[in-house]
Length: 89
Image (cartoon, rainbow, N blue to C red; front, side, top):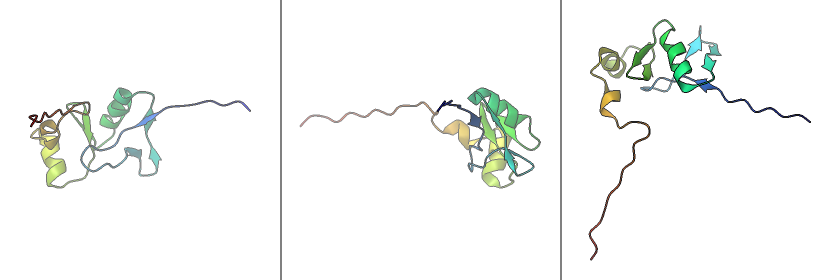
């Protein structure tokens, strides 16, 4: 049996996790993260904020994110690492 692996990316709102879809029924996907975010940014109501994406929901967190005073910008980046040291006793 032949097997083929396919990897694809679906943009999700960085505030609530909603998938970017077409008319509420078909998820929009692409072959890279950047292309998926760009496709979502081109979808009516979706907004790109500093490389992240925000869906069209209107509430305080989503509205703040779209205005540029974003909680996304205050969060550590997706590849951040935290290190802590304890003093030896």
